[in-house]
Image (cartoon, rainbow, N blue to C red):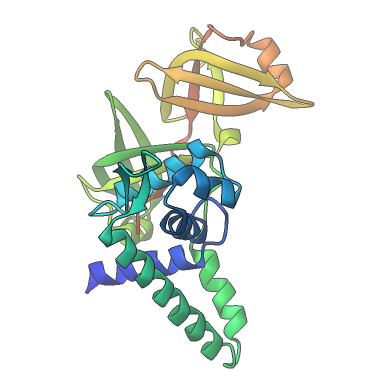
Length: 267
């Protein structure tokens, strides 16, 4: 039942999505392909680029257990694109589910405080503004009286140490081997020159080469590419960029306090 509930939640999120690139936009693309028999004609009808339409189709096919769309050869036009039998079934099922979902919401709207709590539930399915996101696996968890130290292996010999509450460890189900994300806001990243003799209390040090350094009115963005190919972005003052002589090709280090790393897991 647990896996089924997760699937139902994803379907509801898919139904409620309203932008032109995902959710209903993708279903409309499937409908147009079924109607016109051509992905280029479907893209034109929906105001999409041919490349964007194909990327959406490839994304859907990659997520499905059986392809939803297939190329068709032959015929007077020399070929085209069509929904597979599974694609037609999926399209029909989606439209039925969408109708049931809308009727479900309409029925609940008459209940007291529905709108307030529905908006609250939508906030739970949030996106993050954290500029830096690393995916890895928990290497170790060391609990203290209140907080815990979590070591996250992000590959290529790199690890991040985060300090979070014991309650958060339990709520997220963090244990060695569990996959987790490390989220780090760019303003929380301290940048130093690679050869700086300064010692700090920051637990995490990631060194590499500056690949982008763009100044703004007051602050600037510095992107450091690590040897592993990963990168980390920092927002620091223009004055700091100048005093550290940061520019493309210069080696630098990103320092992150363990308490400034947010850990998250997939629902």
